[in-house]
Amino acid sequence: METSLETTRAHRFLLAGELREGSTTRPITSPYSGEVVGLAPVATRDDVVHAIDAAAAAAEAARALPSYARAEAIRRLREELLTRREALARLLALEAGKPISQARIEIDRGLFVLEIAAEEAKRLGGELLPLDLIPAGERRWGITRRFPLAPISAIVPFNFPFMLAIHKLAPAMACGATMVLKPPPQDPLCTLALGEALLESGYPQGAISIVPCSVEDAAPLLEDPRVRVVTFTGSAKVGWMIREKATKKKVTLELGGNAAVLIEPDADLDHAARRCAIGGYSYAGQSCISVQRILVHRDVYGDFLKRFTERVAALRTGDPLDEATDVGPLIDEVNARRAEAWIEEAVRGGAQIAVGGRRRGSILEPTVLLGTRPDMRVNCEEVFAPVTTVRRYGDFEEALTILNDSPFGLQAGLFTHDISRIWRAFEVAEVGGLVVNDISSFRVDHMPYGGVKESGQGREGVRYAIEEMTELKLLILS
Image (cartoon, rainbow, N blue to C red; front, side):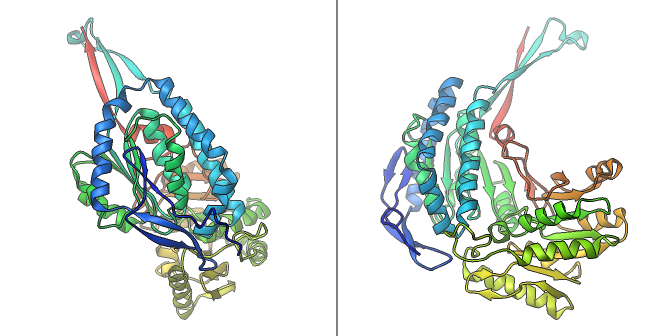
């Protein structure tokens, strides 16, 4: 793999409005080749506290920004990042092992979120309420308005380090909040690049900090009483621990899933097979809405399975910088070994491997498992790897029961043209979003996104994240 001098340089982090060198650095290596991609600074606990100090101090200036100024700051940030689009995509492919074509999509999605946020900054309005519904309210009016909660702590995972950082930063800037953001330890370099671009935006100095620190040194992000909101994307285990620690703060959690897709007899099987092969294996299945459990009506099970396994077997694994690569490595070999162990456990329990199943370093072949039981970890937990299970069902109510037989509830897919079944699934599926005639991993970044049960609380998507990052205040006029 060819590594440029640009990518191997030492990166800096944004602290209180200035780019800082870390007192120590650590190498970030490619999950594919093991080569050093760059040097990441390490912020200390004191740095984290200093960042919160700066965010608290800048809160008034950020809140006072008029709508047009907030929108312009976001627009300038987007324009600066746009000039670095290809370099950011390459850096992301190197540090995260994300195929370059998918890395470009992530960068473009982040730019889209900023575009939407610039518009939402100008739509942050309120409501006029007549209060004369009873005699006591005669000649009185209520006016509502949202005010930013600041500072905000944000914690971002490794699977979409650039886009999900922007999903935190953009709504905060749109509503005039301040933020301290912790990037993922595995691949922080693209997130750190945001710091350089933010300096060109004109948002108040100190309002945003990006601090790459250890879990232990990040404790003030949860414990400091000045922090008003914690927004976290990551594992369910860590997310609910954060909820317990941040007892007096507003907390938004976007957590894991083991998404199911239902395929009814009237489905377009070619379309369903093609989309499931994308949804189960993009970025090696390392997405919380990745297709994991595929439930197929018995009448079309064999036909669908043939089409699906042919498509999965044709997926190309390899170098993330190769334009032809469909599936790259997992984030590290530890996770690849874990997924391999789960596959072996399922096979010992009676499951069969229809496609794949072999591992080479951090690369796990796209795998399809048949004959699994609901209690196997490849079904009941989040596999977070290029692994899907395919199971037949007899009737639609049985399929909905299987779908809901999960501690998670993020998104689900349903392939059918039967409107009565669509409405039935919408009513009873225990998920935050139901996608009809497409896969669970479909997401457009301005839509309300989030889960139920162990999959979290609150919603993202700029407009909905703004609601999570603000509080409603009422003015009563007499």
